[in-house]
Amino acid sequence: MRSTLFRDLALLIARIGLGVVFIAHGWQKFFDDGVRATQDGFAEMGVPLPEISAVAAATIELVSGFALLVGVLTPLAGTLLFLDMLGALMLVHVSNGVFVADGGFELAVALGVGSLLVAAFGGGRVSVDGLFGRGAGWVKTPA
Image (tube, rainbow, N blue to C red; front, side, top):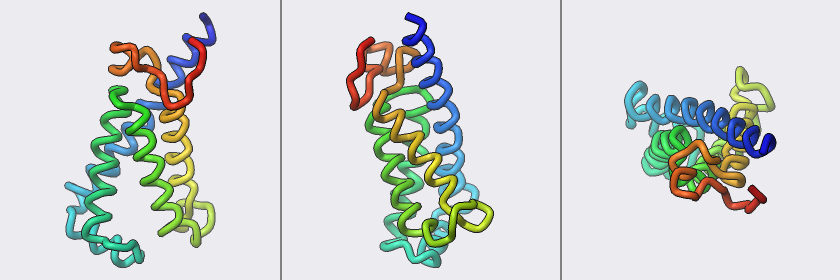
């Protein structure tokens, strides 16, 4: 019982933290910087198909970030966010070293692996998914 409660609390905290950060990044791409500037930035960084990939990244981050925050379709949202961060890692950050201050990969890795864990273990019982008995992720664990 205690381990299940701890798992649900840990998943709730992780979902909220990751969700807020991803929502902020998606919002920034759409509204603070704007789509055109985001596309131009992606082009400067050498991201393929910047007109499409910038909108895709912003949409995944905003929509899936919100999905994590409330815990709806959590395994799918976590997987999409993991793939988004894997793309950022491989296409932009890996050649810049570890530290984010140098354009490095530490933030992309942290957000990506956190998203992967939430995808694997689900949103827990304290989530919209959990309200409908779908709080588990891709990995089935005993309750």
